[in-house]
Image 1: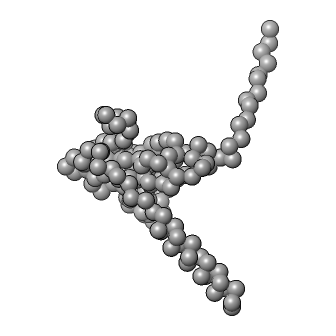
Image 2 (image 1 turned 90 degrees about the vertical axis):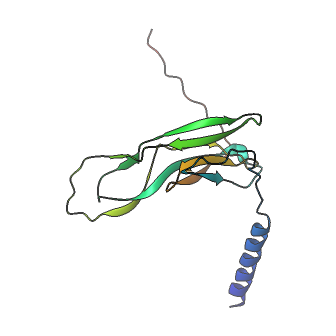
Image 3 (image 1 turned 120 degrees about the vertical axis):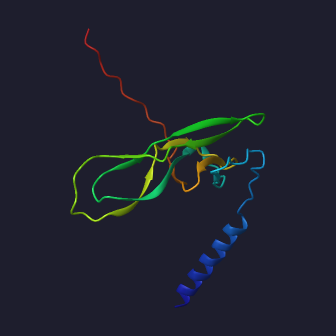
Length: 161
């Protein structure tokens, strides 16, 4: 029992410490969202291993779909330059269309699914946020990928002479 309380206290202290280290990001230099859009931000903590990480993000929305087909969202993600700052930001434009495979599955129940456009992979940078403008009703989800930092060499395929 004492071990559990100690573990709980340690966990709580670590959580409060991490919350206290949360940084406030200044994004005032970025343009305000256009009408019908909202500004999303991916803000990750800086670490000494930033160069060993990548961020993959997707723009999409929750949709009710059938039980068997694969779905995707139509649209384009434009990478833009924040003039005078040298920073990038992204704007997702779509007419709201989706595409899917065409398998028949009338007996399977419908499901709610995050349907997204193509994934975009960028360098991890804990010092600079990733700013993305998306239409109202859309959201951004992301994953962080990490490597051990080791480099590997590709093999040479011998060619017949």
